[in-house]
Image 1 (cartoon, helix red, strand yellow):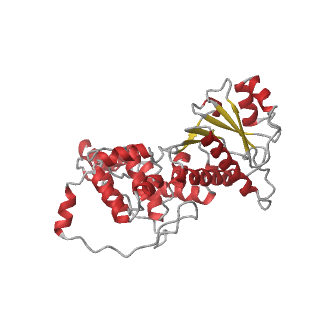
Image 2: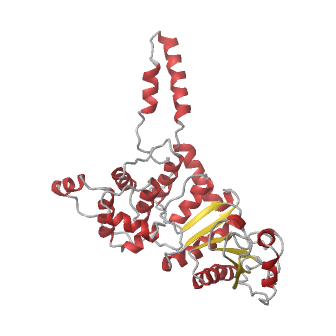
Image 3: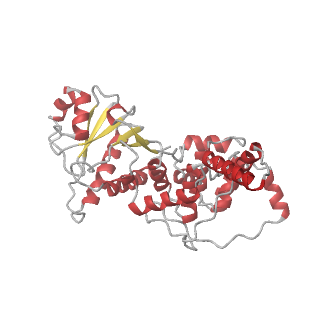
Length: 368
């Protein structure tokens, strides 16, 4: 997938270039800067001395020396002064300048820390938003590059407080722990037997649990009648179109034997979206999309199938139908599935924001 959020030590990431959140002197410091200089060895500092420093928002490149990366791209992020001193513009420039420099040196993979979110004081949730928006904008025009955003832990700051609370509440309301439910069913059966003298066989109790309907539960009563408009960001939702005419019986029958690949390509055509726009919105690599297009029987991973549903802004029923073609279903016993359902119900199809939520809750990310 073109943009991945990972938990790792950036000095150990295997890629063409890692980005250093540097001071303007480029002569090392604390935090990520100090860790990179220490891991790279004295050769890095010696080369940095020849560069004459770096302006805020700009970037310069050196060799990687003892690091697994071939290059280190040094960029100077803005110090936070409340947000009204052009901090966002400068931070966006850090990501854009670094990626442009990486592309000029033939890098196909780049790893970023969360720039300015340490001692420079940029609020972490806002720093993450700038990072994701800036990287995503670059990848729309440069889909041959893989970019990692490296963080240490899936902490709630990756999401706004409200979104984190909303997703967690939705999980609490809709996520079914099958083990707990089985135990609860047994207890209720035992209580029933004690009151009536009737016997409920354990296998019958277990079958109640294991044969639960796979459709997700309806939204809580407090949910709005209409889905909320997704946050303004990189991808603006396309304008609502009039509902298509009901399919004839012949048309519906013609779709029964469709494979996942055939249905996906049909949905892309019906949406008016280009292939490139679809796989970029899905955070899918172009090479993988080519495989799907050329192989009518291609079976994707569940994350890839859902990523395309998000890119096409499919309804919950349409998403289930597309998943079924690939042999999958949405289940209330899967936290991953419940999170996906939450975003679709809310009308939020920003795949990067969805991935942030999945990352925070320690789930696999969308894309491939």
